Image (cartoon, rainbow, N blue to C red; front, side):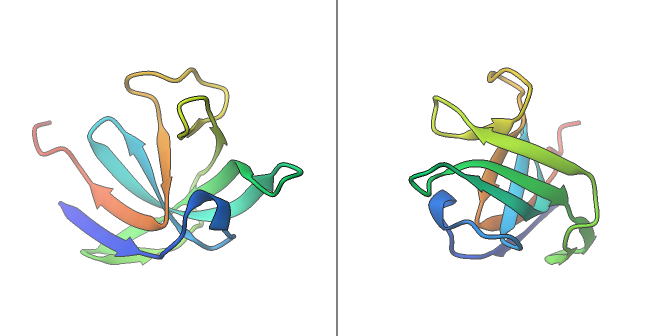
Length: 105
């Protein structure tokens, strides 16, 4: 099953309420930005999101779910705070909501 909703943002343009996607392996889960952390130069260094509910194909109920905090890492991507980067780690993509489940499991 694949559903998607998009907003046009880059990491440094991220604002509260923007669409996001949490990725883990081949699966993607929709989320909404609830907090944005910036350094002195105004660059985004951390993003907190709340998981969204998938109501039906292409329709999401923003926020209200489990909150997760992501931090910017050396590889230029946002990884879940407190865990090492690597294969199988949670990553965050801002600007698009997507729900995709790997059909092979």
